[in-house]
Amino acid sequence: MGLHVFSSSTGDATFHRRISVPTLLVYGLKDPFVSLVEMCEMERTIPRAFLELLPLSGHMLMLDQPQKLNAMMKRFIEKYDTPQSVN
Image 1 (cartoon, rainbow, N blue to C red):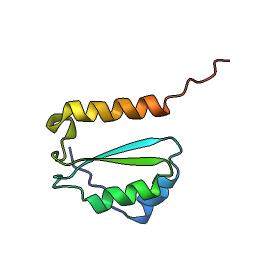
Image 2: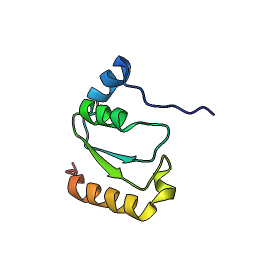
Image 3: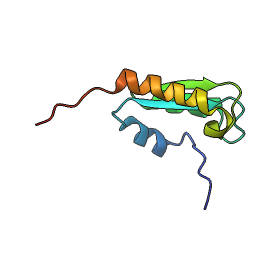
Image 4: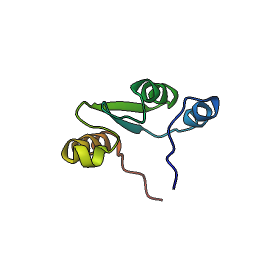
């Protein structure tokens, strides 16, 4: 099993521009694998992306600060989860 590290190559940006749903990006400022610059680039290239930062977390956000991550996700879902019409 390999580790995929986001790179800001043209292919990634092209893919990101096709994402049309609201997207929550959460970054731990102590992440040794992905840089803040890379996450900002991802936020810039995904049309409806929102970047949240966890200053005390690393790459394993869900283990480092599970309560804060859950609260961020809950706020995001509550803001962007709109009921779909049923046909």
